[in-house]
Image 1 (spheres, rainbow, N blue to C red):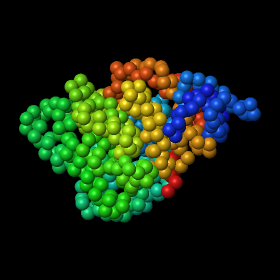
Image 2 (tube, one colour):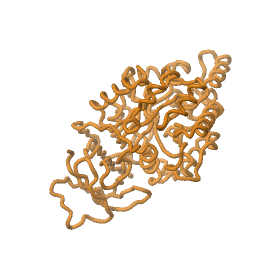
Image 3 (cartoon, rainbow, N blue to C red):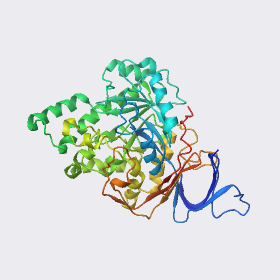
Image 4 (cartoon, rainbow, N blue to C red):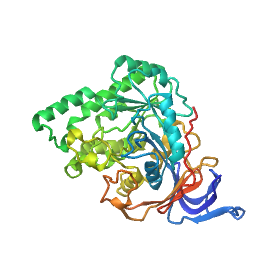
Length: 450
Protein backbone atom coordinates (compact mmCIF):
# COMPACT_ATOMS: atom_id res chain seq x y z
CA UNK A 1 0.00 0.00 0.00
CA UNK A 2 1.39 3.40 -0.99
CA UNK A 3 1.92 6.35 1.32
CA UNK A 4 -0.93 8.78 1.84
CA UNK A 5 -0.88 12.27 0.33
CA UNK A 6 -3.14 15.27 0.66
CA UNK A 7 -2.90 17.86 -2.11
CA UNK A 8 -4.62 21.19 -1.50
CA UNK A 9 -4.89 24.63 -3.11
CA UNK A 10 -4.53 22.95 -6.51
CA UNK A 11 -6.32 24.09 -9.64
CA UNK A 12 -8.04 20.81 -10.46
CA UNK A 13 -8.76 20.20 -14.15
CA UNK A 14 -11.06 17.22 -14.52
CA UNK A 15 -14.20 16.26 -16.46
CA UNK A 16 -14.30 19.60 -18.31
CA UNK A 17 -14.30 21.57 -15.06
CA UNK A 18 -11.68 23.73 -13.41
CA UNK A 19 -11.75 24.58 -9.70
CA UNK A 20 -9.45 25.13 -6.73
CA UNK A 21 -9.71 22.23 -4.35
CA UNK A 22 -8.25 19.25 -2.55
CA UNK A 23 -7.46 15.64 -3.38
CA UNK A 24 -6.65 12.94 -0.85
CA UNK A 25 -4.71 9.81 -1.75
CA UNK A 26 -4.82 6.85 0.60
CA UNK A 27 -2.97 3.73 -0.44
CA UNK A 28 -3.38 3.20 -4.17
CA UNK A 29 -6.62 5.12 -4.53
CA UNK A 30 -8.18 8.57 -4.49
CA UNK A 31 -10.09 8.74 -1.20
CA UNK A 32 -11.68 12.13 -1.72
CA UNK A 33 -11.77 15.09 -4.08
CA UNK A 34 -13.62 18.30 -3.45
CA UNK A 35 -13.77 22.00 -4.19
CA UNK A 36 -12.62 24.54 -1.65
CA UNK A 37 -10.19 24.61 1.29
CA UNK A 38 -9.24 21.78 3.62
CA UNK A 39 -12.26 20.61 5.61
CA UNK A 40 -11.85 21.11 9.38
CA UNK A 41 -12.68 17.45 10.06
CA UNK A 42 -10.15 16.16 7.49
CA UNK A 43 -7.91 13.50 9.06
CA UNK A 44 -4.39 14.05 7.74
CA UNK A 45 -2.47 12.17 10.42
CA UNK A 46 -0.97 9.62 8.02
CA UNK A 47 -0.75 11.86 4.95
CA UNK A 48 1.97 14.05 3.54
CA UNK A 49 0.46 17.44 2.83
CA UNK A 50 1.35 19.15 -0.45
CA UNK A 51 0.44 22.79 -1.02
CA UNK A 52 -0.18 22.97 -4.78
CA UNK A 53 -1.05 26.65 -5.06
CA UNK A 54 -0.42 27.84 -8.64
CA UNK A 55 -0.26 24.21 -9.89
CA UNK A 56 -2.69 22.30 -12.06
CA UNK A 57 -3.80 18.89 -10.82
CA UNK A 58 -4.86 16.49 -13.58
CA UNK A 59 -5.36 12.75 -14.09
CA UNK A 60 -2.33 10.97 -15.48
CA UNK A 61 -2.31 10.67 -19.25
CA UNK A 62 -3.02 7.31 -20.88
CA UNK A 63 -1.07 6.85 -24.10
CA UNK A 64 -2.76 4.27 -26.33
CA UNK A 65 0.10 4.01 -28.84
CA UNK A 66 3.76 3.60 -27.96
CA UNK A 67 6.67 1.49 -29.15
CA UNK A 68 9.02 0.80 -26.24
CA UNK A 69 11.12 -1.72 -28.24
CA UNK A 70 11.50 -4.60 -25.81
CA UNK A 71 12.20 -7.40 -26.52
CA UNK A 72 14.72 -7.51 -29.32
CA UNK A 73 15.26 -3.83 -30.16
CA UNK A 74 16.57 -2.61 -26.84
CA UNK A 75 19.35 -0.42 -28.24
CA UNK A 76 16.49 1.93 -29.20
CA UNK A 77 14.55 1.82 -25.92
CA UNK A 78 13.25 -0.64 -23.35
CA UNK A 79 10.59 -1.22 -20.73
CA UNK A 80 12.63 0.59 -18.08
CA UNK A 81 13.91 3.69 -19.87
CA UNK A 82 10.82 4.66 -21.84
CA UNK A 83 8.29 4.28 -18.97
CA UNK A 84 10.69 6.36 -16.87
CA UNK A 85 10.53 9.10 -19.50
CA UNK A 86 6.76 8.67 -19.55
CA UNK A 87 6.27 9.40 -15.83
CA UNK A 88 8.53 12.45 -16.16
CA UNK A 89 6.08 13.54 -18.85
CA UNK A 90 2.94 12.93 -16.79
CA UNK A 91 1.97 9.72 -18.60
CA UNK A 92 0.92 7.12 -16.04
CA UNK A 93 -0.33 4.32 -18.33
CA UNK A 94 0.66 3.10 -21.78
CA UNK A 95 -0.49 0.61 -24.40
CA UNK A 96 2.44 -0.79 -26.35
CA UNK A 97 2.61 -2.09 -29.89
CA UNK A 98 3.53 -5.66 -30.91
CA UNK A 99 6.23 -5.01 -33.53
CA UNK A 100 9.14 -6.04 -31.35
CA UNK A 101 11.55 -8.93 -32.02
CA UNK A 102 10.03 -11.43 -31.90
CA UNK A 103 6.69 -9.85 -32.70
CA UNK A 104 4.00 -10.35 -30.07
CA UNK A 105 1.79 -12.47 -32.32
CA UNK A 106 1.12 -15.43 -30.00
CA UNK A 107 -0.33 -15.62 -26.51
CA UNK A 108 3.00 -16.93 -25.18
CA UNK A 109 5.02 -14.07 -26.68
CA UNK A 110 2.49 -11.57 -25.41
CA UNK A 111 2.73 -13.03 -21.91
CA UNK A 112 6.52 -12.63 -22.01
CA UNK A 113 6.15 -8.87 -22.44
CA UNK A 114 3.90 -8.62 -19.39
CA UNK A 115 6.52 -10.42 -17.31
CA UNK A 116 9.22 -7.95 -18.38
CA UNK A 117 7.00 -4.92 -17.71
CA UNK A 118 6.08 -6.16 -14.23
CA UNK A 119 9.78 -6.19 -13.36
CA UNK A 120 10.77 -2.89 -14.98
CA UNK A 121 7.99 -0.40 -15.76
CA UNK A 122 7.33 2.57 -13.50
CA UNK A 123 4.06 3.18 -15.33
CA UNK A 124 0.96 1.06 -15.74
CA UNK A 125 0.98 -1.00 -18.90
CA UNK A 126 -0.87 -3.06 -21.45
CA UNK A 127 0.24 -4.67 -24.71
CA UNK A 128 -1.53 -5.26 -28.00
CA UNK A 129 -1.49 -8.66 -29.63
CA UNK A 130 -0.23 -8.34 -33.21
CA UNK A 131 -1.79 -9.86 -36.30
CA UNK A 132 -0.30 -11.76 -39.19
CA UNK A 133 -1.92 -13.35 -42.21
CA UNK A 134 -2.17 -16.64 -40.30
CA UNK A 135 -2.71 -16.15 -36.54
CA UNK A 136 -6.49 -15.76 -36.19
CA UNK A 137 -6.53 -18.64 -33.69
CA UNK A 138 -4.24 -16.64 -31.40
CA UNK A 139 -6.33 -13.49 -31.75
CA UNK A 140 -9.46 -15.32 -30.66
CA UNK A 141 -7.77 -16.54 -27.47
CA UNK A 142 -7.11 -12.98 -26.26
CA UNK A 143 -8.74 -12.02 -22.96
CA UNK A 144 -10.45 -8.63 -23.47
CA UNK A 145 -10.37 -7.99 -19.72
CA UNK A 146 -6.57 -8.09 -19.51
CA UNK A 147 -5.36 -7.02 -22.99
CA UNK A 148 -5.96 -3.58 -24.49
CA UNK A 149 -6.58 -4.68 -28.06
CA UNK A 150 -5.56 -6.30 -31.32
CA UNK A 151 -3.20 -4.40 -33.65
CA UNK A 152 -3.25 -4.66 -37.45
CA UNK A 153 -0.71 -3.01 -39.72
CA UNK A 154 -2.65 -2.32 -42.92
CA UNK A 155 0.49 -0.79 -44.38
CA UNK A 156 4.24 -1.11 -43.98
CA UNK A 157 5.36 -1.87 -40.47
CA UNK A 158 8.58 -2.26 -38.56
CA UNK A 159 8.83 -6.05 -38.74
CA UNK A 160 6.85 -8.60 -40.74
CA UNK A 161 3.29 -7.95 -39.57
CA UNK A 162 1.85 -6.38 -42.70
CA UNK A 163 -1.62 -7.92 -43.14
CA UNK A 164 -2.46 -7.67 -46.82
CA UNK A 165 -4.67 -10.71 -47.46
CA UNK A 166 -8.26 -9.59 -48.06
CA UNK A 167 -9.76 -12.85 -46.79
CA UNK A 168 -7.66 -12.65 -43.65
CA UNK A 169 -8.80 -9.10 -42.99
CA UNK A 170 -12.44 -10.05 -43.45
CA UNK A 171 -12.05 -13.00 -41.08
CA UNK A 172 -10.43 -10.80 -38.43
CA UNK A 173 -13.05 -8.04 -38.72
CA UNK A 174 -15.84 -10.63 -38.58
CA UNK A 175 -14.53 -12.85 -35.77
CA UNK A 176 -12.63 -10.60 -33.34
CA UNK A 177 -15.03 -9.06 -30.83
CA UNK A 178 -12.64 -6.77 -28.98
CA UNK A 179 -11.10 -3.45 -30.03
CA UNK A 180 -8.94 -3.58 -33.17
CA UNK A 181 -6.39 -0.78 -33.63
CA UNK A 182 -5.09 -0.09 -37.13
CA UNK A 183 -2.14 1.53 -38.83
CA UNK A 184 -3.62 2.49 -42.20
CA UNK A 185 -1.46 3.14 -45.26
CA UNK A 186 -1.71 1.56 -48.72
CA UNK A 187 1.58 -0.24 -49.24
CA UNK A 188 1.18 -0.57 -53.01
CA UNK A 189 0.67 3.16 -53.49
CA UNK A 190 3.65 3.91 -51.27
CA UNK A 191 5.88 1.54 -53.22
CA UNK A 192 4.86 3.18 -56.50
CA UNK A 193 5.59 6.64 -55.12
CA UNK A 194 8.92 5.47 -53.73
CA UNK A 195 9.92 4.08 -57.13
CA UNK A 196 9.20 7.44 -58.78
CA UNK A 197 11.40 9.14 -56.19
CA UNK A 198 14.20 6.63 -56.78
CA UNK A 199 14.05 7.24 -60.51
CA UNK A 200 14.56 10.93 -59.91
CA UNK A 201 17.05 10.94 -57.02
CA UNK A 202 18.53 7.42 -56.84
CA UNK A 203 19.45 6.52 -53.27
CA UNK A 204 19.67 10.18 -52.22
CA UNK A 205 15.95 10.90 -51.94
CA UNK A 206 15.51 14.04 -49.79
CA UNK A 207 13.47 13.75 -46.60
CA UNK A 208 11.29 16.58 -47.90
CA UNK A 209 9.66 13.97 -50.16
CA UNK A 210 8.45 11.81 -47.27
CA UNK A 211 4.95 13.31 -47.33
CA UNK A 212 4.84 12.86 -51.11
CA UNK A 213 5.87 9.20 -50.97
CA UNK A 214 3.53 8.41 -48.08
CA UNK A 215 0.82 10.77 -49.26
CA UNK A 216 -2.80 11.47 -48.41
CA UNK A 217 -4.05 9.05 -51.06
CA UNK A 218 -2.11 6.18 -49.47
CA UNK A 219 -3.64 6.98 -46.08
CA UNK A 220 -7.20 7.46 -47.32
CA UNK A 221 -7.11 4.33 -49.48
CA UNK A 222 -6.31 2.18 -46.45
CA UNK A 223 -8.42 4.02 -43.87
CA UNK A 224 -11.53 3.99 -46.06
CA UNK A 225 -11.08 0.26 -46.63
CA UNK A 226 -10.85 -0.30 -42.87
CA UNK A 227 -13.95 1.76 -42.18
CA UNK A 228 -15.87 -0.15 -44.86
CA UNK A 229 -14.89 -3.48 -43.31
CA UNK A 230 -15.73 -2.33 -39.80
CA UNK A 231 -19.11 -0.98 -40.92
CA UNK A 232 -19.92 -4.22 -42.70
CA UNK A 233 -19.08 -6.45 -39.72
CA UNK A 234 -19.88 -3.99 -36.88
CA UNK A 235 -16.28 -4.21 -35.69
CA UNK A 236 -14.98 -2.10 -32.81
CA UNK A 237 -12.36 -0.20 -34.81
CA UNK A 238 -9.80 2.38 -33.65
CA UNK A 239 -7.71 4.01 -36.40
CA UNK A 240 -4.40 5.33 -35.17
CA UNK A 241 -2.45 8.53 -36.00
CA UNK A 242 -4.66 10.32 -38.52
CA UNK A 243 -2.43 12.56 -40.65
CA UNK A 244 -4.66 13.98 -43.41
CA UNK A 245 -7.64 16.23 -43.85
CA UNK A 246 -9.09 13.79 -46.39
CA UNK A 247 -9.45 10.96 -43.88
CA UNK A 248 -11.56 13.07 -41.56
CA UNK A 249 -14.57 12.60 -43.82
CA UNK A 250 -14.64 8.97 -42.64
CA UNK A 251 -15.46 9.84 -39.02
CA UNK A 252 -18.44 11.12 -37.05
CA UNK A 253 -18.83 13.85 -34.47
CA UNK A 254 -22.61 13.78 -34.08
CA UNK A 255 -22.51 11.32 -31.18
CA UNK A 256 -20.25 11.06 -28.10
CA UNK A 257 -17.01 9.12 -28.50
CA UNK A 258 -18.22 6.49 -26.03
CA UNK A 259 -21.11 5.62 -28.37
CA UNK A 260 -18.99 5.20 -31.50
CA UNK A 261 -18.00 1.85 -32.99
CA UNK A 262 -15.32 3.54 -35.11
CA UNK A 263 -12.95 5.96 -33.37
CA UNK A 264 -9.67 7.62 -34.17
CA UNK A 265 -6.61 9.33 -32.76
CA UNK A 266 -4.28 12.25 -33.42
CA UNK A 267 -0.61 12.23 -32.43
CA UNK A 268 1.44 15.09 -31.05
CA UNK A 269 3.81 15.29 -34.02
CA UNK A 270 0.95 15.64 -36.50
CA UNK A 271 -0.46 18.46 -34.34
CA UNK A 272 2.86 20.27 -33.89
CA UNK A 273 4.90 19.89 -37.09
CA UNK A 274 4.04 20.38 -40.78
CA UNK A 275 5.80 19.36 -43.98
CA UNK A 276 7.75 22.63 -44.22
CA UNK A 277 9.63 21.46 -41.10
CA UNK A 278 11.32 18.68 -43.11
CA UNK A 279 13.62 21.43 -44.40
CA UNK A 280 15.20 21.82 -40.96
CA UNK A 281 14.23 18.64 -39.09
CA UNK A 282 14.64 16.07 -41.87
CA UNK A 283 15.00 12.51 -40.55
CA UNK A 284 14.19 13.59 -36.99
CA UNK A 285 10.51 14.03 -37.92
CA UNK A 286 10.28 11.09 -40.30
CA UNK A 287 7.26 9.17 -39.01
CA UNK A 288 4.78 6.81 -40.65
CA UNK A 289 2.23 8.08 -41.53
CA UNK A 290 4.15 11.14 -42.67
CA UNK A 291 3.73 14.62 -41.27
CA UNK A 292 1.89 16.42 -44.04
CA UNK A 293 0.82 19.90 -45.11
CA UNK A 294 -0.05 22.95 -43.03
CA UNK A 295 -3.65 22.52 -44.17
CA UNK A 296 -3.68 18.90 -42.97
CA UNK A 297 -2.27 19.94 -39.60
CA UNK A 298 -4.89 22.64 -39.14
CA UNK A 299 -7.68 20.25 -40.12
CA UNK A 300 -6.47 17.66 -37.60
CA UNK A 301 -6.36 20.29 -34.87
CA UNK A 302 -9.92 21.32 -35.69
CA UNK A 303 -11.05 17.67 -35.69
CA UNK A 304 -9.67 17.24 -32.17
CA UNK A 305 -11.77 20.21 -31.12
CA UNK A 306 -14.97 19.26 -32.95
CA UNK A 307 -14.91 15.61 -31.90
CA UNK A 308 -14.17 13.80 -35.15
CA UNK A 309 -10.86 12.80 -33.55
CA UNK A 310 -11.45 11.14 -30.21
CA UNK A 311 -8.10 10.81 -28.42
CA UNK A 312 -4.52 12.08 -28.33
CA UNK A 313 -1.36 9.95 -28.28
CA UNK A 314 2.33 10.04 -29.15
CA UNK A 315 3.24 7.02 -31.29
CA UNK A 316 6.48 7.24 -29.28
CA UNK A 317 8.88 5.19 -31.42
CA UNK A 318 12.59 5.71 -30.68
CA UNK A 319 15.48 4.84 -32.96
CA UNK A 320 19.18 5.36 -32.36
CA UNK A 321 20.94 8.50 -33.54
CA UNK A 322 23.08 6.34 -35.83
CA UNK A 323 19.97 4.90 -37.50
CA UNK A 324 18.44 8.33 -37.95
CA UNK A 325 21.58 9.62 -39.69
CA UNK A 326 21.18 7.14 -42.54
CA UNK A 327 19.90 8.00 -46.02
CA UNK A 328 16.17 8.24 -46.64
CA UNK A 329 15.41 4.61 -47.56
CA UNK A 330 17.71 3.27 -44.82
CA UNK A 331 16.48 5.62 -42.11
CA UNK A 332 13.71 4.09 -39.96
CA UNK A 333 10.55 6.07 -39.29
CA UNK A 334 9.54 7.16 -35.82
CA UNK A 335 10.89 9.15 -32.92
CA UNK A 336 10.64 9.70 -29.16
CA UNK A 337 7.98 12.07 -27.81
CA UNK A 338 6.46 10.89 -24.55
CA UNK A 339 8.54 12.97 -22.13
CA UNK A 340 7.32 16.23 -23.65
CA UNK A 341 3.88 15.35 -25.02
CA UNK A 342 1.94 17.14 -22.28
CA UNK A 343 4.18 20.25 -22.31
CA UNK A 344 3.77 20.41 -26.10
CA UNK A 345 -0.01 20.05 -25.86
CA UNK A 346 -0.20 22.69 -23.13
CA UNK A 347 1.96 24.95 -25.30
CA UNK A 348 -0.70 24.63 -27.98
CA UNK A 349 -3.17 25.72 -25.29
CA UNK A 350 -1.07 28.85 -24.63
CA UNK A 351 -1.20 29.53 -28.37
CA UNK A 352 -5.00 29.36 -28.28
CA UNK A 353 -5.31 26.11 -30.25
CA UNK A 354 -6.71 23.91 -27.46
CA UNK A 355 -7.81 24.30 -23.86
CA UNK A 356 -6.29 22.38 -20.93
CA UNK A 357 -9.72 20.84 -20.30
CA UNK A 358 -9.76 19.47 -23.86
CA UNK A 359 -6.23 18.05 -23.54
CA UNK A 360 -7.15 16.27 -20.31
CA UNK A 361 -10.31 14.89 -21.87
CA UNK A 362 -8.59 13.60 -25.01
CA UNK A 363 -5.38 12.29 -23.38
CA UNK A 364 -6.94 10.74 -20.27
CA UNK A 365 -10.75 10.59 -19.96
CA UNK A 366 -11.68 9.49 -23.46
CA UNK A 367 -8.85 6.98 -23.76
CA UNK A 368 -10.14 5.35 -20.58
CA UNK A 369 -13.67 5.39 -21.96
CA UNK A 370 -12.89 3.93 -25.39
CA UNK A 371 -10.72 1.14 -24.03
CA UNK A 372 -12.94 0.68 -20.96
CA UNK A 373 -9.93 0.96 -18.66
CA UNK A 374 -10.81 -0.05 -15.12
CA UNK A 375 -10.83 2.87 -12.63
CA UNK A 376 -8.33 5.10 -14.41
CA UNK A 377 -8.31 8.22 -16.55
CA UNK A 378 -10.32 10.40 -14.16
CA UNK A 379 -9.91 12.08 -10.79
CA UNK A 380 -12.73 10.27 -9.01
CA UNK A 381 -13.15 8.85 -5.54
CA UNK A 382 -12.34 5.14 -5.56
CA UNK A 383 -10.23 5.39 -8.73
CA UNK A 384 -6.54 4.55 -8.82
CA UNK A 385 -4.47 7.57 -7.84
CA UNK A 386 -2.76 8.23 -11.17
CA UNK A 387 -2.30 11.93 -10.62
CA UNK A 388 -0.07 14.64 -12.09
CA UNK A 389 0.86 18.11 -10.86
CA UNK A 390 1.72 20.61 -13.60
CA UNK A 391 3.42 23.96 -13.17
CA UNK A 392 1.75 25.91 -16.01
CA UNK A 393 4.08 28.89 -15.73
CA UNK A 394 7.54 27.37 -15.53
CA UNK A 395 9.75 27.56 -18.57
CA UNK A 396 11.87 24.62 -19.71
CA UNK A 397 14.30 24.28 -22.59
CA UNK A 398 14.53 20.79 -24.06
CA UNK A 399 18.21 19.82 -24.10
CA UNK A 400 19.94 16.54 -24.81
CA UNK A 401 21.03 16.44 -21.16
CA UNK A 402 17.42 16.60 -19.97
CA UNK A 403 16.25 13.64 -22.05
CA UNK A 404 15.49 10.31 -20.39
CA UNK A 405 15.07 8.30 -23.59
CA UNK A 406 17.60 5.58 -24.24
CA UNK A 407 18.10 6.91 -27.79
CA UNK A 408 19.31 10.26 -26.44
CA UNK A 409 17.56 12.61 -28.86
CA UNK A 410 14.23 14.33 -29.42
CA UNK A 411 12.61 16.27 -32.27
CA UNK A 412 11.87 18.89 -29.60
CA UNK A 413 15.53 19.52 -28.70
CA UNK A 414 16.01 23.27 -28.62
CA UNK A 415 12.29 23.94 -28.07
CA UNK A 416 11.18 25.99 -25.09
CA UNK A 417 7.96 24.99 -23.37
CA UNK A 418 6.20 27.10 -20.76
CA UNK A 419 4.88 24.33 -18.54
CA UNK A 420 6.57 21.56 -16.57
CA UNK A 421 5.45 18.24 -15.12
CA UNK A 422 6.29 18.68 -11.44
CA UNK A 423 5.06 15.49 -9.75
CA UNK A 424 3.63 12.21 -11.02
CA UNK A 425 1.78 9.70 -8.83
CA UNK A 426 1.20 6.17 -10.12
CA UNK A 427 -1.21 4.03 -8.09
CA UNK A 428 -0.78 6.42 -5.19
CA UNK A 429 3.03 6.30 -5.26
CA UNK A 430 4.97 9.52 -5.80
CA UNK A 431 7.15 8.11 -8.57
CA UNK A 432 8.45 11.42 -9.95
CA UNK A 433 9.12 14.50 -7.84
CA UNK A 434 10.74 17.47 -9.62
CA UNK A 435 13.41 15.38 -11.32
CA UNK A 436 13.80 12.77 -8.58
CA UNK A 437 12.48 9.25 -9.12
CA UNK A 438 11.28 6.76 -6.52
CA UNK A 439 11.57 3.37 -8.21
CA UNK A 440 10.46 1.33 -5.20
CA UNK A 441 7.07 0.50 -6.70
CA UNK A 442 6.46 -0.57 -10.27
CA UNK A 443 3.35 0.05 -12.32
CA UNK A 444 0.40 -2.31 -12.64
CA UNK A 445 -1.07 -4.26 -15.53
CA UNK A 446 -4.14 -2.45 -16.81
CA UNK A 447 -7.47 -4.21 -16.65
CA UNK A 448 -10.57 -3.47 -18.71
CA UNK A 449 -14.29 -3.45 -17.91
CA UNK A 450 -15.41 -5.53 -20.88
